[in-house]
Each structure stands twice: as C-alpha cells, then as structure tokens.
Amino acid sequence: MAENFRILKGLPAYGDLYVSIPQNGYKEFSEGFVIEFLAQNGHWVGNFQLGSSNLKFVAQLDENEMLVIADGTVYLVDVNSKRELLHFGFHYDQVLQYDRFFILVDDYSIDIVKNSSEIKRFKDLSLDGISGVKIQKRKLTGISHDFDGYGKSCENQFSIDLETFEFKKHKPKWWRFW
Image 1: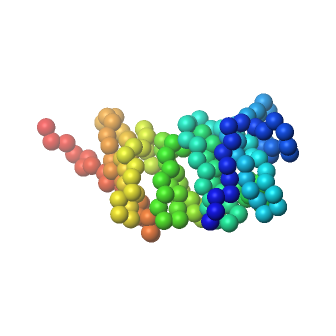
Image 2: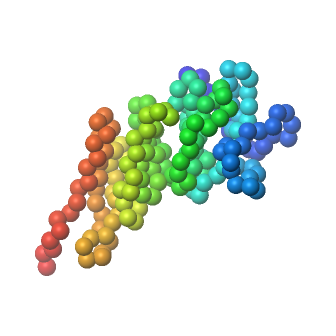
Image 3: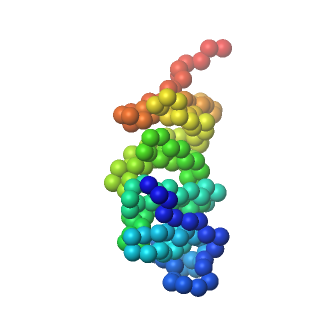
C-alpha cells in the first residue's frame, strides 16, 4: 500500500477547513496532531486532540483505515469518509508491529489492533506499570509491576501468544524463605 498521509508541522493557513477529531473535543480545542490525508476524493487535513504521552504515530491499517496515535490517544480513522471510527486511551507510550497487527502499550494495559473491527484488549494487567515489553519469536513478553500479599512491590513476567492471543502471567511463589 502506498503511504497516503503526511504529518504537518501545524494547521495550514489556507485551503479547506481542517476536520477536528474527535468531533466533540474539548471546547478550547486548537492545534493538536495535524495530518494531511490523501483520500479517493481528494485530500483533507485532520486535527487530532492530544493525549498525555509523547507518542505520535501514524500507520495504514487497510485501504481506507488509518491508525493515528496523538500523544498517546488512539484514533482509528476512515480516510475516505473523513471521520473517526473509534478512539480510546490517552497515555499509550509504545507501539510495536507484528505481522499485520499493531501492539499498543500503556502503563496498565495492552491492545492489539488489526483494524477497527479486530481489536484484542488486555486491560488492567498491572497495578503499578508495565515495562520491558518486546516481541520474542511469536510471543509478546514483558514485566508487570504489582504488589505481593505483604504490600511489597514485586515484578511478574507475562506473555501473550500473538497467534492465539492467550495471556499468561508467571506469578512468583507466595511463600518466602528466610
């Protein structure tokens, strides 16, 4: 697929009015993450409301759908109809690609996106953050930071099989040796 977008430094000073995404963004919505799209019926500019991380990312999912991450907020956009199909999150800070999937990681959850109708969500994986997320062979691995029964911080390794989407958390033994 040919790339049909261009990230702009700011809103264009002339031409057609930009499209605010989401449509019901906050009242004082001004310049966000600005992208020019090339659709079947011409080009248009989308102005995406920002989230709370530093991750900016754009990728084409299929012929009509784009994945846009605007400072951590995820948008799935239909380029030809100039509208958002879905938006979620506000603090995604890592994106990985495996096959035709995009793996989105925030502090507490992981989402695997193929398109707007195929999203696998793994919510609340951690109480105190996720780190070390990487793809090894056909598995996504990482560390979830939690608390043990004594209120102390502990790290648990986890894995997600990227073919079956089976989640496994490898918890440490609950007993202690002195």
